[in-house]
Length: 372
Image 1 (cartoon, rainbow, N blue to C red):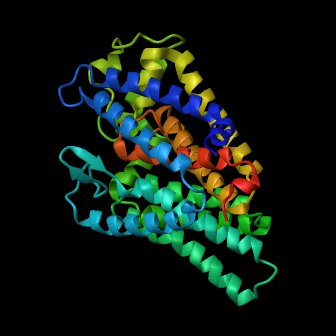
Image 2: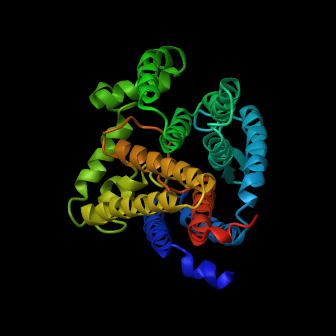
Protein backbone atom coordinates (compact mmCIF):
# COMPACT_ATOMS: atom_id res chain seq x y z
CA UNK A 1 0.00 0.00 0.00
CA UNK A 2 2.75 2.46 1.00
CA UNK A 3 4.80 1.70 -2.12
CA UNK A 4 1.72 2.19 -4.29
CA UNK A 5 1.07 5.57 -2.68
CA UNK A 6 4.67 6.64 -3.33
CA UNK A 7 4.42 5.50 -6.93
CA UNK A 8 1.14 7.31 -7.61
CA UNK A 9 1.91 10.54 -5.77
CA UNK A 10 1.96 13.63 -8.00
CA UNK A 11 5.50 14.86 -7.46
CA UNK A 12 5.01 17.86 -9.75
CA UNK A 13 2.58 19.25 -7.15
CA UNK A 14 5.15 18.65 -4.40
CA UNK A 15 7.95 20.32 -6.39
CA UNK A 16 5.75 23.36 -7.11
CA UNK A 17 4.92 23.76 -3.43
CA UNK A 18 8.54 23.36 -2.35
CA UNK A 19 9.76 25.98 -4.86
CA UNK A 20 7.10 28.46 -3.71
CA UNK A 21 8.00 27.92 -0.04
CA UNK A 22 11.72 28.47 -0.74
CA UNK A 23 11.03 31.71 -2.64
CA UNK A 24 8.65 32.78 0.14
CA UNK A 25 11.21 32.16 2.90
CA UNK A 26 13.77 34.27 1.04
CA UNK A 27 11.23 37.05 0.61
CA UNK A 28 10.17 36.96 4.28
CA UNK A 29 13.82 36.99 5.38
CA UNK A 30 14.50 40.07 3.29
CA UNK A 31 11.26 41.78 4.36
CA UNK A 32 12.24 41.58 8.02
CA UNK A 33 15.97 42.12 7.66
CA UNK A 34 16.04 45.83 8.53
CA UNK A 35 13.30 45.69 11.17
CA UNK A 36 13.26 44.79 14.84
CA UNK A 37 9.67 43.53 14.98
CA UNK A 38 9.68 41.16 11.99
CA UNK A 39 13.31 40.05 11.99
CA UNK A 40 12.58 36.46 13.06
CA UNK A 41 9.47 35.89 10.95
CA UNK A 42 11.33 33.69 8.47
CA UNK A 43 12.31 31.40 11.37
CA UNK A 44 8.68 31.19 12.51
CA UNK A 45 7.66 30.47 8.93
CA UNK A 46 10.16 27.60 8.78
CA UNK A 47 8.71 26.23 12.04
CA UNK A 48 5.18 26.45 10.64
CA UNK A 49 6.34 24.74 7.45
CA UNK A 50 7.94 21.92 9.45
CA UNK A 51 4.75 21.41 11.45
CA UNK A 52 2.72 21.52 8.24
CA UNK A 53 4.90 18.86 6.59
CA UNK A 54 4.22 16.46 9.49
CA UNK A 55 0.48 17.15 9.23
CA UNK A 56 0.66 16.72 5.46
CA UNK A 57 2.34 13.29 5.74
CA UNK A 58 -0.32 12.10 8.19
CA UNK A 59 -3.18 13.25 5.92
CA UNK A 60 -1.46 11.79 2.86
CA UNK A 61 -1.45 8.32 4.48
CA UNK A 62 -4.99 8.50 5.94
CA UNK A 63 -7.81 6.31 4.75
CA UNK A 64 -9.65 8.33 2.12
CA UNK A 65 -12.99 7.79 3.89
CA UNK A 66 -11.69 9.83 6.83
CA UNK A 67 -12.30 12.96 4.76
CA UNK A 68 -16.02 12.34 5.06
CA UNK A 69 -16.37 12.45 8.85
CA UNK A 70 -13.26 14.65 9.18
CA UNK A 71 -14.91 17.40 7.17
CA UNK A 72 -17.88 17.62 9.53
CA UNK A 73 -15.62 17.66 12.59
CA UNK A 74 -13.38 20.37 11.14
CA UNK A 75 -16.40 22.41 10.05
CA UNK A 76 -18.00 22.19 13.51
CA UNK A 77 -14.82 23.14 15.39
CA UNK A 78 -14.06 26.01 13.01
CA UNK A 79 -17.64 27.28 13.31
CA UNK A 80 -17.34 27.48 17.10
CA UNK A 81 -14.00 29.28 16.75
CA UNK A 82 -15.46 31.76 14.24
CA UNK A 83 -18.06 32.72 16.81
CA UNK A 84 -15.50 32.87 19.63
CA UNK A 85 -13.05 35.03 17.67
CA UNK A 86 -15.67 37.79 17.44
CA UNK A 87 -15.16 38.36 21.18
CA UNK A 88 -11.38 38.78 20.97
CA UNK A 89 -9.58 42.17 20.92
CA UNK A 90 -9.46 43.87 17.53
CA UNK A 91 -6.19 43.48 15.63
CA UNK A 92 -5.47 45.57 12.53
CA UNK A 93 -9.11 46.67 12.49
CA UNK A 94 -10.62 43.17 12.62
CA UNK A 95 -11.43 40.41 15.10
CA UNK A 96 -10.01 37.59 12.99
CA UNK A 97 -7.18 36.11 15.06
CA UNK A 98 -6.54 34.28 18.31
CA UNK A 99 -3.23 35.32 19.88
CA UNK A 100 -1.32 32.42 21.46
CA UNK A 101 1.80 33.98 22.92
CA UNK A 102 2.76 35.82 19.75
CA UNK A 103 1.53 33.10 17.39
CA UNK A 104 -1.67 34.18 15.64
CA UNK A 105 -4.32 31.69 14.54
CA UNK A 106 -7.05 32.65 12.07
CA UNK A 107 -9.98 30.16 12.24
CA UNK A 108 -11.41 31.27 8.89
CA UNK A 109 -8.44 29.62 7.16
CA UNK A 110 -9.14 26.01 8.17
CA UNK A 111 -12.87 26.68 7.79
CA UNK A 112 -12.18 26.78 4.04
CA UNK A 113 -11.13 23.13 4.19
CA UNK A 114 -14.10 22.24 6.38
CA UNK A 115 -16.51 23.90 3.94
CA UNK A 116 -14.90 22.21 0.94
CA UNK A 117 -15.10 18.72 2.49
CA UNK A 118 -18.70 19.12 3.74
CA UNK A 119 -20.08 20.66 0.58
CA UNK A 120 -18.18 18.19 -1.63
CA UNK A 121 -20.07 15.40 0.14
CA UNK A 122 -23.38 17.24 -0.28
CA UNK A 123 -22.70 17.96 -3.96
CA UNK A 124 -21.74 14.33 -4.65
CA UNK A 125 -24.89 13.03 -2.92
CA UNK A 126 -27.01 15.46 -4.89
CA UNK A 127 -25.40 14.62 -8.22
CA UNK A 128 -25.52 10.85 -7.71
CA UNK A 129 -29.18 10.88 -6.66
CA UNK A 130 -30.57 13.73 -8.76
CA UNK A 131 -32.78 11.40 -10.77
CA UNK A 132 -34.11 9.56 -7.71
CA UNK A 133 -35.22 12.39 -5.42
CA UNK A 134 -38.28 14.59 -5.75
CA UNK A 135 -38.28 18.36 -6.17
CA UNK A 136 -38.84 19.04 -2.45
CA UNK A 137 -35.78 17.01 -1.43
CA UNK A 138 -33.69 18.70 -4.12
CA UNK A 139 -34.59 22.08 -2.64
CA UNK A 140 -33.63 20.81 0.84
CA UNK A 141 -30.22 19.60 -0.39
CA UNK A 142 -29.58 22.90 -2.20
CA UNK A 143 -30.60 24.80 0.96
CA UNK A 144 -28.16 22.73 3.04
CA UNK A 145 -25.33 23.41 0.60
CA UNK A 146 -26.14 27.13 0.64
CA UNK A 147 -26.17 27.26 4.44
CA UNK A 148 -22.83 25.43 4.66
CA UNK A 149 -21.32 28.34 2.73
CA UNK A 150 -23.35 31.26 4.02
CA UNK A 151 -23.08 30.66 7.79
CA UNK A 152 -19.25 31.01 7.90
CA UNK A 153 -19.38 33.84 5.35
CA UNK A 154 -21.72 35.87 7.58
CA UNK A 155 -19.47 35.27 10.62
CA UNK A 156 -16.37 36.29 8.63
CA UNK A 157 -18.08 39.47 7.39
CA UNK A 158 -18.82 40.36 11.03
CA UNK A 159 -15.07 40.35 11.83
CA UNK A 160 -14.96 42.13 9.25
CA UNK A 161 -12.86 40.30 6.63
CA UNK A 162 -14.36 40.89 3.21
CA UNK A 163 -11.43 39.36 1.28
CA UNK A 164 -11.69 35.97 3.00
CA UNK A 165 -15.48 36.00 2.61
CA UNK A 166 -15.10 36.42 -1.15
CA UNK A 167 -12.83 33.35 -1.19
CA UNK A 168 -15.77 31.22 -0.06
CA UNK A 169 -17.92 32.47 -2.94
CA UNK A 170 -15.16 31.63 -5.44
CA UNK A 171 -14.83 28.13 -3.94
CA UNK A 172 -18.61 27.72 -4.26
CA UNK A 173 -18.54 28.94 -7.88
CA UNK A 174 -15.88 26.38 -8.84
CA UNK A 175 -17.79 23.53 -7.20
CA UNK A 176 -21.06 24.62 -8.81
CA UNK A 177 -19.34 24.61 -12.20
CA UNK A 178 -18.06 21.10 -11.50
CA UNK A 179 -21.59 19.97 -10.62
CA UNK A 180 -22.71 20.71 -14.19
CA UNK A 181 -25.15 23.43 -13.22
CA UNK A 182 -27.23 24.77 -16.12
CA UNK A 183 -25.99 28.01 -17.67
CA UNK A 184 -29.24 29.85 -17.00
CA UNK A 185 -28.58 29.49 -13.29
CA UNK A 186 -25.06 30.86 -13.74
CA UNK A 187 -26.42 33.86 -15.66
CA UNK A 188 -29.08 34.41 -12.97
CA UNK A 189 -26.38 34.28 -10.28
CA UNK A 190 -24.24 36.83 -12.15
CA UNK A 191 -27.22 39.17 -12.47
CA UNK A 192 -27.96 38.75 -8.76
CA UNK A 193 -24.34 39.61 -7.92
CA UNK A 194 -24.51 42.73 -10.08
CA UNK A 195 -27.68 43.79 -8.28
CA UNK A 196 -26.10 43.08 -4.89
CA UNK A 197 -22.90 45.06 -5.59
CA UNK A 198 -24.36 48.46 -4.64
CA UNK A 199 -26.15 46.90 -1.66
CA UNK A 200 -22.91 45.39 -0.37
CA UNK A 201 -21.00 48.61 -1.01
CA UNK A 202 -23.39 50.94 0.81
CA UNK A 203 -24.77 48.71 3.57
CA UNK A 204 -22.19 45.97 4.34
CA UNK A 205 -18.74 47.41 3.67
CA UNK A 206 -17.35 49.66 6.38
CA UNK A 207 -15.93 53.12 5.46
CA UNK A 208 -12.36 51.75 5.31
CA UNK A 209 -13.34 49.05 2.82
CA UNK A 210 -15.31 51.57 0.74
CA UNK A 211 -12.28 53.83 0.67
CA UNK A 212 -10.12 50.94 -0.56
CA UNK A 213 -12.40 50.53 -3.58
CA UNK A 214 -12.31 54.28 -4.30
CA UNK A 215 -8.53 54.25 -3.99
CA UNK A 216 -8.32 51.17 -6.21
CA UNK A 217 -10.09 53.12 -8.94
CA UNK A 218 -7.85 56.16 -8.32
CA UNK A 219 -4.93 55.73 -5.84
CA UNK A 220 -4.00 59.39 -6.22
CA UNK A 221 -7.16 60.38 -4.31
CA UNK A 222 -5.29 59.80 -1.06
CA UNK A 223 -1.60 59.08 -1.81
CA UNK A 224 -0.42 59.52 1.79
CA UNK A 225 -3.10 57.41 3.48
CA UNK A 226 -5.60 55.06 1.78
CA UNK A 227 -3.76 55.11 -1.55
CA UNK A 228 -0.31 54.76 0.00
CA UNK A 229 -0.17 50.93 -0.01
CA UNK A 230 -1.20 50.62 -3.66
CA UNK A 231 1.25 53.28 -4.83
CA UNK A 232 4.23 51.91 -2.89
CA UNK A 233 3.49 48.37 -4.03
CA UNK A 234 3.46 49.36 -7.70
CA UNK A 235 6.69 51.34 -7.23
CA UNK A 236 8.32 48.25 -5.69
CA UNK A 237 7.13 45.94 -8.47
CA UNK A 238 8.25 48.35 -11.18
CA UNK A 239 11.66 49.13 -9.65
CA UNK A 240 12.68 45.46 -9.76
CA UNK A 241 12.80 45.51 -13.56
CA UNK A 242 14.14 42.27 -15.13
CA UNK A 243 16.61 40.85 -12.61
CA UNK A 244 15.74 42.81 -9.47
CA UNK A 245 17.75 45.07 -7.21
CA UNK A 246 19.22 42.09 -5.37
CA UNK A 247 18.27 40.42 -2.10
CA UNK A 248 18.35 42.88 0.83
CA UNK A 249 18.89 45.77 -1.60
CA UNK A 250 15.35 46.90 -2.46
CA UNK A 251 14.72 50.52 -1.44
CA UNK A 252 10.97 50.06 -0.94
CA UNK A 253 11.51 46.89 1.07
CA UNK A 254 14.54 47.79 3.15
CA UNK A 255 13.68 51.40 3.99
CA UNK A 256 10.16 50.69 5.17
CA UNK A 257 8.16 52.31 2.37
CA UNK A 258 6.41 49.05 1.50
CA UNK A 259 3.71 48.17 4.10
CA UNK A 260 2.82 44.71 5.48
CA UNK A 261 5.65 43.41 3.33
CA UNK A 262 6.08 39.91 4.76
CA UNK A 263 2.46 38.89 4.24
CA UNK A 264 0.07 40.95 2.09
CA UNK A 265 2.78 42.45 -0.13
CA UNK A 266 5.32 39.62 -0.26
CA UNK A 267 4.96 39.50 -4.06
CA UNK A 268 6.04 43.15 -4.19
CA UNK A 269 9.17 42.27 -2.19
CA UNK A 270 9.96 39.40 -4.55
CA UNK A 271 9.33 41.55 -7.64
CA UNK A 272 11.56 44.37 -6.37
CA UNK A 273 14.53 42.36 -5.15
CA UNK A 274 14.36 39.29 -7.41
CA UNK A 275 12.98 40.98 -10.51
CA UNK A 276 10.57 40.06 -13.27
CA UNK A 277 12.34 36.74 -13.85
CA UNK A 278 11.51 35.32 -10.42
CA UNK A 279 8.09 36.99 -10.14
CA UNK A 280 7.18 35.52 -13.54
CA UNK A 281 8.51 32.16 -12.35
CA UNK A 282 6.14 32.39 -9.36
CA UNK A 283 3.19 32.94 -11.72
CA UNK A 284 4.31 29.99 -13.88
CA UNK A 285 4.65 27.71 -10.83
CA UNK A 286 1.16 28.64 -9.63
CA UNK A 287 -0.23 28.01 -13.12
CA UNK A 288 1.39 24.58 -13.29
CA UNK A 289 0.12 23.78 -9.77
CA UNK A 290 -3.46 24.74 -10.68
CA UNK A 291 -3.35 22.77 -13.94
CA UNK A 292 -2.06 19.66 -12.16
CA UNK A 293 -4.84 19.89 -9.59
CA UNK A 294 -7.45 20.35 -12.32
CA UNK A 295 -6.17 17.17 -13.96
CA UNK A 296 -6.36 15.35 -10.61
CA UNK A 297 -9.97 16.52 -10.19
CA UNK A 298 -10.84 15.42 -13.71
CA UNK A 299 -9.25 11.98 -13.29
CA UNK A 300 -10.63 11.32 -9.79
CA UNK A 301 -12.52 8.03 -9.53
CA UNK A 302 -15.56 9.38 -7.70
CA UNK A 303 -17.52 12.63 -7.50
CA UNK A 304 -16.70 13.24 -3.83
CA UNK A 305 -12.95 13.40 -4.41
CA UNK A 306 -13.39 15.36 -7.63
CA UNK A 307 -15.50 18.00 -5.86
CA UNK A 308 -12.92 18.25 -3.05
CA UNK A 309 -10.04 18.97 -5.43
CA UNK A 310 -12.19 21.37 -7.47
CA UNK A 311 -12.96 23.36 -4.31
CA UNK A 312 -9.27 23.46 -3.42
CA UNK A 313 -8.45 24.68 -6.93
CA UNK A 314 -10.97 27.49 -6.43
CA UNK A 315 -9.38 28.41 -3.10
CA UNK A 316 -5.85 28.62 -4.52
CA UNK A 317 -7.02 30.36 -7.70
CA UNK A 318 -8.71 33.15 -5.73
CA UNK A 319 -5.74 33.75 -3.41
CA UNK A 320 -3.27 33.67 -6.30
CA UNK A 321 -5.23 36.07 -8.53
CA UNK A 322 -6.39 38.41 -5.74
CA UNK A 323 -3.03 38.82 -4.01
CA UNK A 324 -0.93 39.34 -7.14
CA UNK A 325 -3.71 41.45 -8.70
CA UNK A 326 -3.77 43.85 -5.74
CA UNK A 327 0.02 44.23 -5.63
CA UNK A 328 0.17 45.34 -9.27
CA UNK A 329 -2.92 47.57 -9.06
CA UNK A 330 -5.38 45.41 -10.99
CA UNK A 331 -7.61 44.54 -7.99
CA UNK A 332 -8.60 46.27 -4.73
CA UNK A 333 -6.29 45.77 -1.76
CA UNK A 334 -7.45 43.14 0.74
CA UNK A 335 -5.72 41.14 3.45
CA UNK A 336 -5.63 37.98 1.35
CA UNK A 337 -2.25 36.16 1.62
CA UNK A 338 -0.34 34.58 -1.24
CA UNK A 339 -0.28 30.79 -0.60
CA UNK A 340 3.10 29.34 0.47
CA UNK A 341 4.83 32.73 0.07
CA UNK A 342 3.12 35.05 2.56
CA UNK A 343 4.07 34.87 6.22
CA UNK A 344 1.45 33.24 8.44
CA UNK A 345 1.04 29.97 10.32
CA UNK A 346 -2.72 29.64 9.76
CA UNK A 347 -2.32 30.15 6.03
CA UNK A 348 0.64 27.76 5.77
CA UNK A 349 -1.11 24.95 7.66
CA UNK A 350 -4.34 25.39 5.69
CA UNK A 351 -2.55 25.36 2.35
CA UNK A 352 -0.45 22.33 3.26
CA UNK A 353 -3.54 20.46 4.50
CA UNK A 354 -5.20 21.25 1.17
CA UNK A 355 -2.18 19.96 -0.76
CA UNK A 356 -2.08 16.83 1.42
CA UNK A 357 -5.72 16.09 0.58
CA UNK A 358 -5.00 16.58 -3.13
CA UNK A 359 -1.98 14.25 -2.92
CA UNK A 360 -4.05 11.68 -1.00
CA UNK A 361 -6.64 11.68 -3.77
CA UNK A 362 -4.10 11.69 -6.61
CA UNK A 363 -2.15 8.80 -5.04
CA UNK A 364 -5.29 6.67 -4.97
CA UNK A 365 -5.90 6.71 -8.69
CA UNK A 366 -7.08 3.12 -8.75
CA UNK A 367 -10.68 2.78 -7.59
CA UNK A 368 -9.92 -0.32 -5.52
CA UNK A 369 -7.67 1.80 -3.30
CA UNK A 370 -10.74 3.62 -1.99
CA UNK A 371 -11.60 1.48 0.98
CA UNK A 372 -15.25 0.59 1.50
